[in-house]
Image (cartoon, rainbow over all chains, first blue to last red; front, side, top):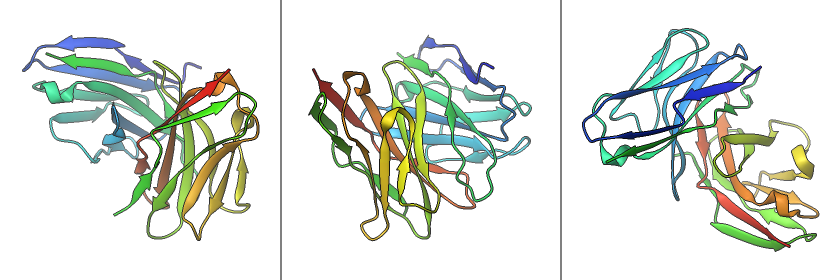
Length: 115
Length: 113
């Protein structure tokens, strides 16, 4: 049981390049999330997917797109990378829990630098 | 707007002493509250959560937190700190019926030997 996995672990891009961050979970969770972590700003939600086939914008969606490929996989795409997107990106998943107090499980993160 | 505040960027405590990491929140309705810990170059790990019931919640590694509705606080505590507790701690809130979690900015805990 690997939990939440993310690839790649590190990436360096030039401004204007595109790339896709991959995330997969093997816990049969319904909901999946993409966050970015920046110093002094905590975690900010980029996009989330409440269930397979649905995606919704979070707090900072501009410059990103997502695909919920199936129940296991949720990818994040940067179409034209900008230096402001230099950050650490975390994927998370959570099971449904009656009442909504579901715990999130996080992947190890992708450290992205845009030059 | 819903928000979570962690007023201290860093907390220093001597090993063996009690520790407190503060969290306050501002939401409408009844929140679900969480604490997560992040070790260097790792993802966040769940520590504990408050959903309903007893205001004192016990979690992993000897941590506990007290939900105080009147003060809208959810402070993280541990009776005796260990050097290995040194990490970045995040408080988070989620509202029932929503999928969005709101995280605080994090507090770096440094336990000194």
